[in-house]
Length: 248
Image (cartoon, rainbow, N blue to C red; front, side, top):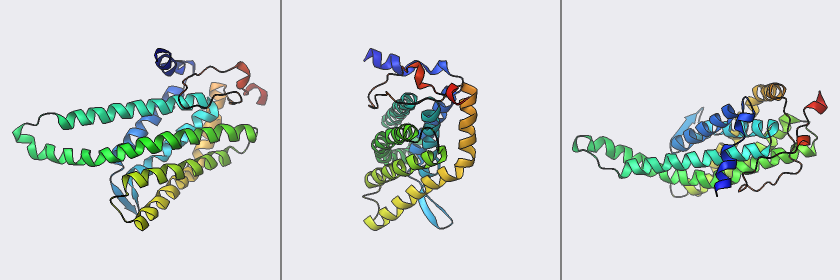
């Protein structure tokens, strides 16, 4: 257990920008969890508010996997999970704490919102643990299969699969008692397409950014010998895994 946490917190300082992408990743996870219960509508299309921002986690995960390797993407997934646990635990503690009489109505509204959010957070935990590792796994494997080419296709392909898994699992846990099954599937498809659509829209930004990061970090990692178990926190890579110099 000690080695697990030592591995988890080590290695980030070896790179200049990795900490930033991991921080953005965790913040987006927390924001998506909090705003998931709110259904929003744009141009006649309804979806949950978390879906609008959640695709950024796939984008950050894609960049981390592409540049730094699957092992660091897995580290980000663990950080996102642990901070979500802390977020949930603190919210539960606040909800169960005593309430002064003068704030009873205000606190009752907060407690009601948080109680509703608990189901969404649990749904998010489960879908997160399946979709996020799958996204990074597909990215890492496609990179080897395609010899580092077709980055845009790999970004979209991994998100296409992972976003469906995330939307399917999340919606069936969070909304199964709130909507009819027909409406649930309509919402699910919209959630999925919005996530993939945002990934597509972001390609004009994410692909040049990823190339610049590779150049800046002098890093282009290939996970040829990686243990892809999500329960491993090992971040050791052999020197030959970085193939940036081969493409110079």
